[in-house]
Image (cartoon, rainbow, N blue to C red; front, side, top):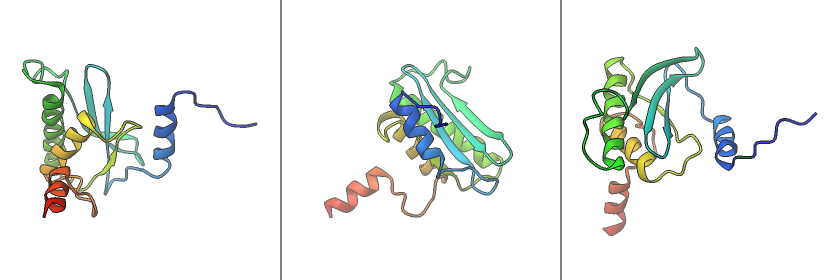
Length: 135
């Protein structure tokens, strides 16, 4: 019997990505979920099934934030990175969860990268890539 057919294109991309992206204790998965109003970030160790750090824009500290959703995504990315660094996590694997790498997803990723996480070789922030192409 064949497996279950996934009708939602994002869920299909998510499952396809999940075959290659696994969080380990040495390099947990930095997972970003975006809804129409909110953004959620988790640092997950898939081998042990544990969430090591999490942040979202619906936390009490973020509810008073005034700004656009993209600016809130930058703050959520920084908050998740601070919590991961406090637990001694320095290297992560980025999981975009089937979403396109643009807008709020990219903002959260780049904020974590600026804090010192997601330092995988080959990962270049978009501002650095733009500077290199102009030279």
